[in-house]
Length: 210
Image 1 (tube, rainbow, N blue to C red):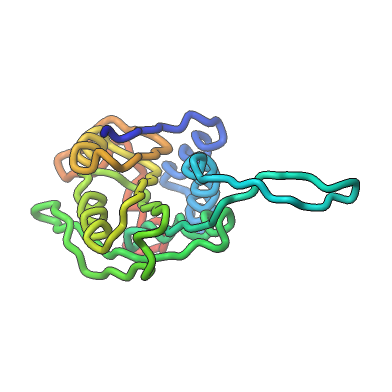
Image 2 (image 1 turned 30 degrees about the horizontal axis):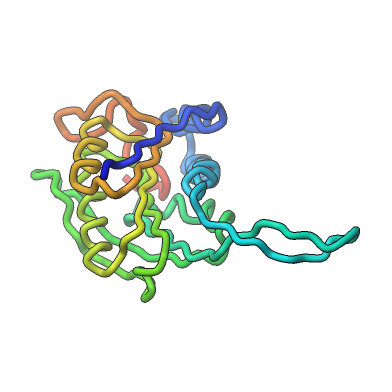
């Protein structure tokens, strides 16, 4: 099995990503833009959701229509920056459950270190969308998915704003059964493992911290 990697080329998404990159974009606008991009990407992420036939009454006559077979979705943000995606995705899937995985990157080794995990009890029955604005080395995403799988998660995909080629390669090799959705693929990582040109520290920009 090989990961499906989708880089979005929709004009609205690309425009909003450009606004996110601008250093003068305020935290308020940054949060709003991340929410909007998450909502737009969410349409494609859920393209494979199963449908069922339902009998309804329209104002004109009875009809057989298509509705979701079930809204068994779990949104799992990687703390803290992944929280920026949650509101937009809940606008699309209001019945989704939300779990949280806490990871931070060691400043010297750049390795991901887990500090928190809380998942829905029925995680094994849900379509899981792991969300994080940045895919740099891939360490946090790989560790988060390792953790989710160890708790019973099976049907997993990931959603990122910005990704470096190094992170895409690492994640797809570590978890070839996980589809990867990206708003924009950037050039590379610098010597500090930051994405170039990137958009800075997404968590700091979301929450106004340094």
